[in-house]
Structures are given as structure tokens and as C-alpha cells.
Length: 124
Length: 496
Image 1 (cartoon, rainbow over the protein chains, first blue to last red):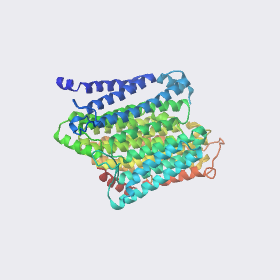
Image 2: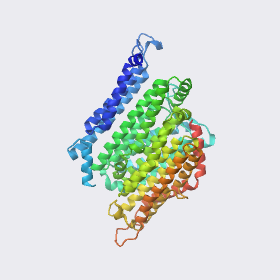
Image 3: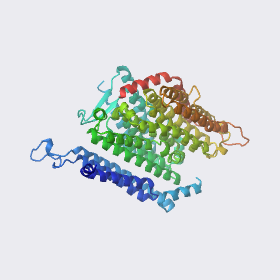
């Protein structure tokens, strides 16, 4: 287990980050902290992907000086996936933030449980 | 032949572009564009279904003409084409049934935004049905989530915004798990196309090289999609989201959005992981247990509810439980029952929402049971629609719910190990369903002294027509079940 863990150090870190982000998003009452959790969770996945695409000793997959051998470059697909994922997570974060602003304007608090309590009192 | 290959792609793109174009159109134009695009997609799907029935071949469309392991693919078989046709029909009926209510509940300047969201929703649902690429599926899952969130909060009050936030949080947790699962699967197999992944997974499985990562991946994918489709312990957002949004949104969300994710899960089970590998991992037993728990707990919450819309919402939790129970039984027959229940629940639940809105309209807008007394006499067509929906949910013969319960029971009998719990819970859940639906039906048909507003069929022609279509669709699914079951069976065989 020891040497395996050391060889996959980055992946282990990204898993720990994923758990931290997931727990934050699930358990925190504060909406802003939830969104921070969301971003930690998504970034950890991108870290994981980027690590998986990297091959030691190979360079960026842009053909220069006519070198076309596969052995020269790293795998470009995970980088592409990371880019797509970032776009998705940015749009989702923007949506969450806009919802948070609306809730804050209405109830002057960021605590989701408090908001639910007030909604029950309003009895809509 | 060559031209028909493009139809799945056209359906996705027509819906997506009409969403984009709607952003610069006025309210009326956006409405017509939405209506026309859904009809066109309905027609394309019908032609596609007819064509695949005739030839029996699977249509594979290569995006950008890159060959298999590198390119992105769209793949259409019998099941996909039929589901697209069915989803379009439900979308059409839900939109027309709730259009009048939309006028009252949503600010007029935002109507074209509503149609954009509906168009994007349909595009993402179609993409989830047709795509053969896991990462594309993830991207469309997110588009689906965002547009669903918009559909919830388009009616602006505190409740809907809170519901949208809760929905987003649950969905984002689910999509985080799904994305992690996809990344790990890409890691151990090196592919993103579903068919290639399955070949790699089966060789990994038989070589026994990555047992733990494979199991973890299956857990992540299942758990992520279960969270998004509101399986029992993750259902907390359902009541608010379906209960307070505008009625078309509630109908679309409950009958189509959660189903889209389940379709993706079924696709992952058959086409990505492989049915045998999935069954050998014991995740399927966990899914079975949570499905059973959902069937009971959803119904119990619905019985306690005093608000008709929230009651219907909790009833969907129970119905989602049925579907997962079917997946958990782990046989081909049970899977057919699950897919049949997806159809039957989609047809019935949207019908209940549309019926309920007519009843609340004649009860001073109140959704509490006390006010609803006798509303079935004041708005006859809505009363009949709600009663038919309830009977179908309880499982009275002639309606679609009966057939799906029958199929589930037959499938349970075939599985010796899980037979007893499945049958017992099925019986209990049916009784619970009967308690709360029949309570409501008796309530709306109890004569009352109070004079309320009455609405006749002539006053709301479009609404009445929608209701009649819903009733017809339900009876059609209930009466012509055998061809539908045969179609699902053939579709599943093409799926793999």
C-alpha cells in the first residue's frame, strides 16, 4: 500500500479534496460555503483528470519541428475534458450565486435552514 | 436511408436552435416556435421509429465523420426512437395543459425565457436518449439540471427560489459523483464511447485486474444518477420543487426530467458496464433495497400531506422507487417492467398535475383538501382527469398503472431470492397508494353546500382537449400493453 500510495500521491490528494468539497456542499448551512465546496469538488476532479493525462517526460501535445511520434506528447483528451468541465462548473456556479443573491435580498440571510424556517412561518 | 440517419441529430439541433432563436423573439413567436419545433421532432421521431421497425437495423451517426474510437457518436435503436417520440408527446401535452396558468403565474416579459428553457430541456433529454458518448452525456446532464432549475424558479416567490437552491445542491452532488465515475472509467478503460468502454470493461472484468476501481466506478455512477432522479433518501427537494413551480414545469419535471437520468442509468448498465458485470457487483442489491424503501416512505409522506400538489409530488418518490426496484431485481423481464413504468408514470403523473390545477382553479386557488371538497362537480373534465390518473396510480385494470404493477409482480416471481420482499412491499405500497389517492378522489366528489365558481368544458377548450388526450394516452398504454412490452423487449436487445 505504501509505495502504491506514494506513486499515486496526486490522485490521493484529489480524492481527499473531493471528499472535502462534497461534505462542504452537503453539510454546510451557509450558501456561500456550499458554493465554495462545489468548486473544491469540481477542481479536485480536474486535478485527477489532468494527472491521469500526464505522462512523465512527454511534452505538450502541439506538433513542433515535425515530431509526430506518439511517445513525444502527453494525452490531450483529458485536457479537453477538463476544459469542458470548467465551462460547465463556471456556469453552474454562476447560477448558484445568482440564486443566492435573490434569496439574500428576500430574507437577509445566507443560512438555508433559517430561510426554510421563515418560509414555513409565511405559510405560502 | 442515408437521410434518415440524420434524424436523431436533427431532433437535438432543432430543439437547441429554437431555444437560441427564442431569446430574440417575442412572447407569441417564441410560443409558436416551441410548439412547431416539438411537433417537428415528434414527426421525425415517429418516422425514425417506423424506419427502424421496418429494417431492424441500428442507426449510428458519426459526428464529424471521425471513426469509432476517436469520434463522437449518436446511436438510435428501437427503444431510443420510441422514447423520443413518447417524451415529445408528454412535453406537448404538459405545455398545452399548463399554458393558461403560465399567463397568470409568470411575468409576461419572461415568457420567452420560459420557452428557451423548455427547448433546452427537450434538447438535453433527446441528447441523453441518443448519445453514445459518456462525456457528452455528462455535459447534457448539466444542461438538463440548469434548465430544470430555471423551470422551477421562473415563477418568482420565496418558495420556488428555495426549492431551486435545494434542487441545485442535490443535483450538483449527484453530477459531481457522476463526473468522478466517468473519469475513473475513462482511466481504467481509456475510452469515452459507450460500446468501446464495454469491450474494455468485460476484458478487465474477466482478467480480474482492477476489481476495486471498477466497483467504485459502478457505485459512483449509480449513486450520482440516483441522487439526481430523486431516489428515496435524496428526495427532500421534490415536494417544494414540484409543489410550487408553475404547473407545466411540475408536469415536465416529474414526468420527464427524473426519467431522463434513469434512462441514462439503464443505458450505462447495458451499454457501458454490461448487464452481467453490473449484476455481479452487489450494487444492484443496494439499489433494490433503496427502491423498496422509497416505495414505502414516499407513500407515507404523501399520506401525511395536506396539500394536493405536494401529495402528488411525494407520490412520484414512491413511483421512482418502483422503477429502481425493477432495476434492482436484475433480470431482463424486470428491466422491461421498469421501462414500462417509466412510460406509464410519465403519462400518469403529468396528467395528475394538469388535472389538479383545474381543481384548484375552481377552489379559490387553494390547494388544501378542505377547500377542494366538491371541486370535481365544479370543473368536470379536471375531476375526471384527476380520477383517471388516481385510478391508474392505484393500479385499477384498464389503466396503465395496472399493467406496470402486473409486470413488476411477474418479474418478482421470476427472481426467487428477491421475490418475497418485492411482492410484500408491492402489496403494501399499493394499499398506501389507494389510501391517499382514493381519499382525494372521494373528497373532490363529495357534494357541498357552498356555491363555488364553475368552469365548463366550453370555457377552456384547449385544456379540455389536453385532458382528453391524456386520458386517451393512459387507456391506450393500459389496453395495448402487449405490443408496447414487445417493443421494449426488442429495444433492450438492440440496446446492448
